[in-house]
Length: 161
Image (cartoon, rainbow, N blue to C red; front, side, top):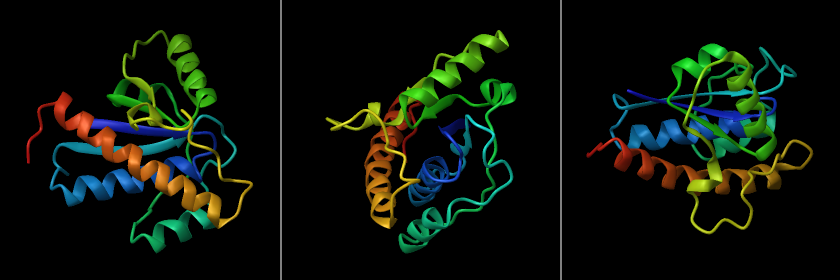
């Protein structure tokens, strides 16, 4: 099973929504036995908290289920997950610092939008200080990027439906 970890700053906006989108696409593709995902943050700001209410509203509007509590990335995640997918450059740097400080190796650390063809920006913007429109924009970015990321994974791991 290929394990994917989506990572943002606080694990209450972007990464839990990315996890929900990924899980839904995996389920719709009948690939739940091939791929598994989780999400976390690089900070400890929201450990144990539910996702932001606007994240939950956006997910519900799209028919997505989110059952998650905020948590912080740790060394076990580096060992357990095949892909560490950051929402922005700062998160990616923090992931790489954790990897370096732990003495572990990890070759599969990416920005999610690296998989999106011709993105207007390489980072997924943080919608925290915006309104529901900002969350809708992030949903659209995540949805497109994850579609391409899942295609990459299927090809990379020779998974055929």
